[in-house]
Length: 149
Image (tube, rainbow, N blue to C red):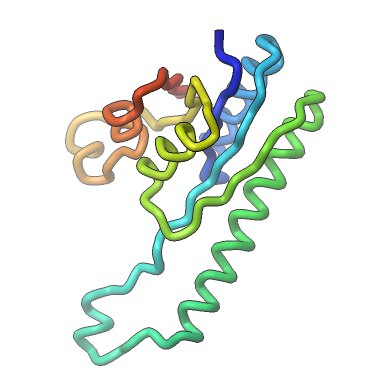
C-alpha cells in the first residue's frame, strides 16, 4: 500500500514520536523511508534593520553553517533510530525553505506516497497565533498524511 514514506522531523521530542511511528509503519509494510528536516531562511528583525543593523555575508555564512549542523544532528538522530530497527533510510535537509511547502515538495520529488509527521494538535486561538505546519501540509498535500499526536 505505502511503498515510500516521507517522515518529517524538526528534532523535537514530539517530532521523534512521529519518526518512531513512521519507522514502525515502514518496517511493518516493508516500505522505503525518506526522512526530511527543513531549516528556514535567516530571520531578520524589522526592529534590528530599523536600528541600522544590516546582515553581512559573514552573518549569512555563519547562519547557514549553524543550520546545516543543526539539520545534520537531527537527521543523524533519526537515522540512528532507523538503524536500531534495521531500516535503511535516505535523509534530506532542505535549507532556506518554508517547512510545509518543503515537506510537500520533498514527498513529490522523492516519489513518496505517504507523509508522516507529528503535531501538537493545537486548536482555536493558539493554532491561529502559532501557525500550524501540519495543517498546511494537510491542506496542500496530494498524497495521504498521517498525523501523530
